[in-house]
Length: 370
Ligand code: G6P
Image (tube, rainbow, N blue to C red):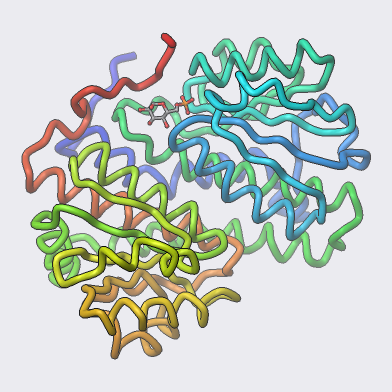
């Protein structure tokens, strides 16, 4: 069927606004909403016996995998390795027989990720694919497959595929933790309950930012910048990298995503009034540390833009020149919500600059040649 943009100017905009619905669909396929337990599809391994997870992906999918590392390591207490497919496939690294190798891809066709999967298979280990296109090469070749239900994603810069990957990965982390006995049923149902709240919080946020004057000012500031620094700690670190990637991809602004605690080892040398610093900072277990890094930025007259919640906003009001206040959400689920402002910043900056939002120069929707 032909897919249209409806009332939206670009596919990317439409796909951003579809997120509450498609996150809900994806969660609905992986959570028994009455019993609040996860329902994972048949997997190629016995989850109770897994002692290590290897996640391989490219681009935005790699950042989804990077968030999953924090979730799995903290909930399941087993080591998780996350790697870029084009590095992993040529490294001739060890493939652990007691491990689960997970390949994340919207298209299921990205050649480097597919080649990495074939490498793991050739070593006799089990492979699991998390894909959005169920008929794709990765879905066919993997020993097991999980699906995101984002629907067709047309915009080259990934949006809804990413947040649905996060939703699916959170469910996988919970399922794995229950199978390994590292969390009890009460904690599992608390997390699935928080996940089930995410679509409503996302919808609330999209409505809140739509036409918001202070958000427009932020977009103006960013569109005049040559360089932008995105900071975050913990699960917000990959979200900072994803925010920076979105700015590069469609707004053609040089942006870097950095671990907030690592800023003092380099990027702080770049800070002046000209470089906006966007902090992804929900009030979670990392917040105080991130806040103190933002103090360092403000002390150098850096222009801090904080993406935070009500409590965070109260704390950062003296430091941040702009604050995007998000609805309160369970910190574990925050990455799904905190991605949205980053997508919208890149989108509106690109529209202001007049770039080809859905077909950015030099980029392809899926990279199937080496
Ligand atoms: C390309 C796209 C990105 C995407 C990446 C990985 O670079 O432009 O949006 O994140 O490929 O694609 P995949 O289909 O494997 O998730």
